[in-house]
Image (cartoon, rainbow, N blue to C red):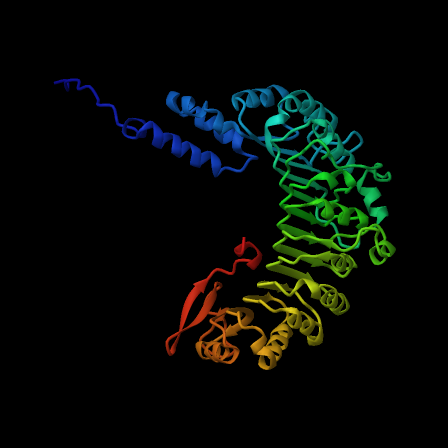
Length: 454
């Protein structure tokens, strides 16, 4: 006997049980947590889920982040820009792996070269550049980078706030002009000025990485609050100082591995000296054995609170210690990294600190802790605000208790071990602090002090 047909009840989906507001929140979380490189794919997959999700993703807010690479087609870029419907944009231009005309190592031949990519940017992005809020542009060669940003640099805009430029990969600190020329396809670096900026009036954050050639084009940007110059080579010291002097609202300054045009230029006195940065609260400085430190003697930062120093080599450290002494008086959070130097060089740093609250030497040599202990033993009354020390040690609870009592601090951060000389109990650090007559412990993620004090 045949089984009678029974209509199947449709299974309820989240579209039936959740409100449109919650569905929009789910889509927003999904797309915001997706990297910009894969965003277009994930966004299309989301649109293909069902008609309702397609309607949700039609909202302009989901189209503000746009990634432009060598595979991006002009019509697809134009369509994305039209979908964003006039809202502020986040644009990332990725020109790193671009096939060159005479490059036999390039396997994929169907992708456009840099000129085609630049032409697409000119035709599609330039008309909409007035609403770009964040711009990141990367290339492997100086000339390619200039081609990619050349047209948009002539677009006047008040919307642009955040700019990040990168050329090449991480380069050795001993980069010389001949290496620069090789990276620029065998010829000398193009004549400056290179950096666009004269029509970008409200840039707040500027990050220049690797081989970006710096010129005076940025000197008119008084609105900068963050300036990050990293691994940049062949830079006139005069240009950096002129650039800093023009800033009026700068709060964060990063100078990491900045090589001046010549060794002579790094040691001679520039025309612009005695630059006072009244609003700077955070300074991150890295020096890999060159004379980058010489610029510090021309800078004053009366409001400096957070200082991160990464130094290599005894001679370099001793030079920096004496050069930046005038910057230390107001520092409350100090981080020293990878200091390979005798203790007397470090003592010059300790001596300059007055309002210090936290000292982080978890990434320094063990001798740095010996130097700090010696200084605190005889000068503890000078550091009335010192509350926490972070050290590169494996400590038992008893050893941590001794340090808390001896150094008279509220907490010590280190790796915890059960027995003297034993292995750490966890990869995470431990915060030891006095609680009554006992020492309490709290797991502490070893987050960089520079990021923790943001």
